Structure formats: C-alpha cells, structure tokens
Length: 168
Ligand code: QAP
Ligand code: CO
Image (cartoon, rainbow, N blue to C red; front, side, top):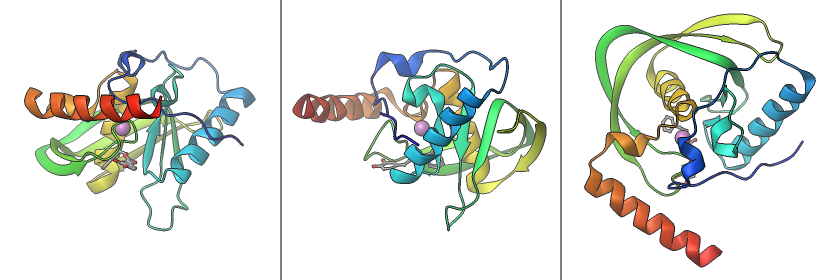
C-alpha cells in the first residue's frame, strides 16, 4: 500500500473531468486501496481519484466513527431522491484548514460498481449524502468552494497559495 500526494486548491489539475472506468482491474484495485490508505491517514471521510491526480471516475468514502466501513464507488451516478435541501459545513482534503456551509439535496440514490466490479446501489442521507455529492463533484472538476461567494473563495485561494509557496 502507498500513500498518495493530494493536490491542493487552486491546482488546475483539480478542474479536469474524470473519464469512466472501462474495466475494474487488479491495477485499479491497488489504486482504490492506496486511496483508502491516503484518506485514512489524512484523516478524511472521502477522497476522489481527481484529488490524487488520477482522472478516472473513482471515489472512496468512510463516514463511520470507527473508520471501518469503507465504500468504494467506480463510475458513480447520483440521482436526487428528495427536493429538500440541507446545509452542511464542508471541508476538503484539497482545501486544508477551511470549512464553509454548502447547500445540497438531502437524499440521493447512487449507482456504481464496487471494488470487485459488481454493480450496486445505495440510498444516502445525512453526512453520507453530502460526502457522495462532494466527491462526485471532484470527478467533474468541481470543488465545494465553487458554491461560496467569490470573495470568500479568493481569500481561501490567497491563503492556500501563500502556504504552498512557503512549503515549496
Ligand atoms: C468531504 O472531506 C466532506 O480541512 C471529505 O485540514 C467534507 O475528508 C464531505 C480534512 C465534509 C462531507 C462533509 C479537511 C482533513 C478532511 C481539512 C474530508 C483538513 C484535514 C476533509
Ligand atoms: Co473534497
């Protein structure tokens, strides 16, 4: 297993749209395992392949308290089940240190392939629903900061650019 490097906002590679996976191979399973390791070490509750500079439609999530309920989604497709909108203070491993309130549909159904390449579907509410929508956004090149005001987004951008310069 290997820990992967996570791209940080405003890296333009986070804007790439990921391509569907054609076949779930052993190589892809290794990537999924490395993504889980990277997410658990962070620690985080969700990670999209885009964030580790792999532009394929893969997401890993674990919103359980014990961090022992890994969910892998290959080619996820989301369907809104409830028009009701909920607010959640979202963060992101690619936007470290910043949290902002985002509104999203509260209940969704997700269809995807699992780590074994088998199709499955789940219905999600609460944190899981937030996380799934946040991660699928990454596959489409979108970030939670796109939903907040340009003023707040630009402040976050400058602060992150500054800390990235210090590290470089
Ligand atoms: C997406 O985000 C998410 O700023 C996953 O310094 C977030 O795992 C879905 C993290 C909120 C639903 C609600 C963020 C770690 C982790 C940070 C994460 C940080 C260290 C974020
Ligand atoms: Co994120």
